[in-house]
Amino acid sequence: MKFTRAAGLACALALAGCASITNGSRQMISLQAVDAYGTVPGANCMLTNSKGTWYARTPAFVTVHRDYGRLIVRCEKAGYDSGLLTAKSYTKGTVFGNLFAGGVIGAGVDIGDGSAYNYPQFITVPMTPKNVDAMLPQAGDPVSVPGDGGEIAVSGLRK
Image (cartoon, rainbow, N blue to C red; front, side, top):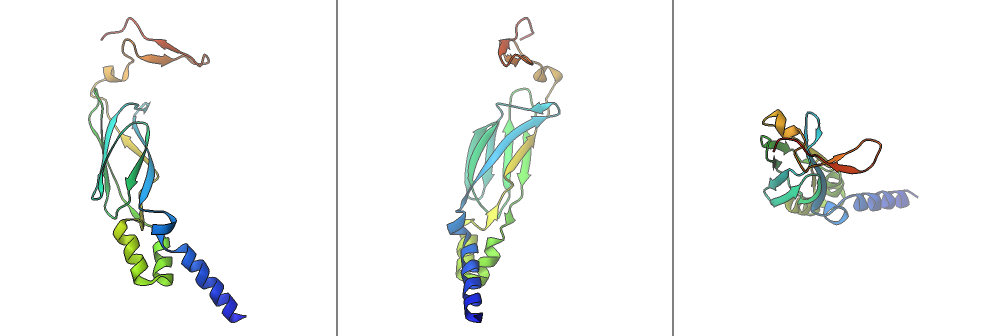
């Protein structure tokens, strides 16, 4: 009976370990840019860590390579100061299970390929308008009409 429990525990730990197999070395992140009034759609962002560089336009889902190092996110849009955010990675719990069940070799693989780490699932980059005019709708911009569900084009505004 003791052997059965020990074997069951060993199997459970073995399945909990090895992040390379269970999660892989890539992670999908939800990316958005915001200012004091809400979301900033259409910001061009660059995400960088030691494993690579990825580009996206907000709002977006971006798949990045996991890494121990920080993920640096820089977003730019006309009329706004550049937004900069540094996301810190954290070690996933599966690495510790892997150390116990799979030994140093399994943990070493997870650490080496980045699968031992996670970034925050949601990244929000703060942006600041250079002036108030950047936040106002411009001529031709679509604007939602409350309760209508449709859009109208703004006209008669400064260009």
